[in-house]
Image 1 (cartoon, rainbow, N blue to C red):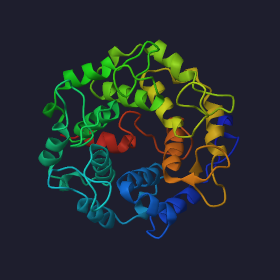
Image 2: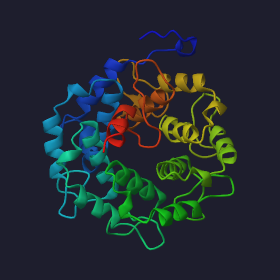
Image 3: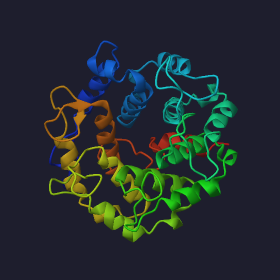
Length: 321
């Protein structure tokens, strides 16, 4: 995969090997599949979105995936991480995103799914992840993203949801999981993403947050999630998408980040790890490829920084009535 730009001459994305790695990861007898059994819905979303970004979604059986996915839905309307597990808003979003990839949202009872998600909003505008009540700004993003894809944002109090997210903003410009919690790149993505989807980015101090985010780049070119932490490929997504949404992505060295991601590849067996020479997994493979997509790496489809789905998928959904 050659590039006309000298920016990308430091290495190559071994896309075919990553595709093979993802398809092998879905084999039920693999170790990875066994330890991820309870969150298979997330794994399916990571793997399938990676395949779509590499233009290889046709490598999987749509009917097989969708049939399994629907066995994970509960009477409440929510989805579980796998058949026989409890529903949670996180797995519900992954299920909706997978159906969006396949252009199969029409098989959903949208009213039922959206009512499940909307029912998790609390009086203060925050969201619980499930019936057990844990509150986190991750769940605010997940609910808002899910309902936006389903075109049901009117089922929640958006103003209160935004106010709660803003209450989690810190003096450094970042956001935490609850009011007063420390800033973290993952939470920042969730809060900025939710604010972007609801048209509320005016609440963000873009220069202050942009500075905090660009400070996450370390000497190796990789990004970390908090000060003094090691770099990790997954922050190529959390930090980069946030910088793009607030128009400050030019504040980091993109070429060095591309090199860091490519250095985390298993060139022989496929897959991407958190750091060079570590064991690969499906989570970091997805976020590595998604990061390269945000960096406009040749041969990787464009991904939407707020919805975490390919741009063509989001356009298909949001530009149709």
